[in-house]
Length: 99
Image 1 (cartoon, rainbow, N blue to C red):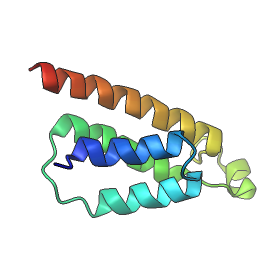
Image 2: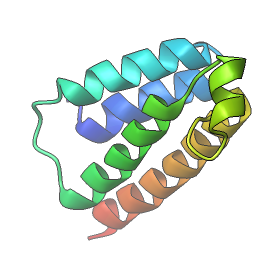
Image 3: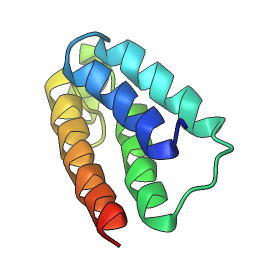
């Protein structure tokens, strides 16, 4: 069974393992999230929604990064955000399994 957790954690881990570029991850995550039809608990939805905003804010365009560094994320910042979300997703998952 491919759960919401598995779909997203697999994608995230592929990015963190450098199997996907930042742009490929961003594009894939946004497409997956926009087309998500599976049932989703609010807690995991909020984490993924936060990551959607981060993926959407990613750019490799130096001009955009310079114009609004408080909004746009570079590769290093995206990786940091993704790592943090995955950590929080795993905490959520362990609480689900324990319940």
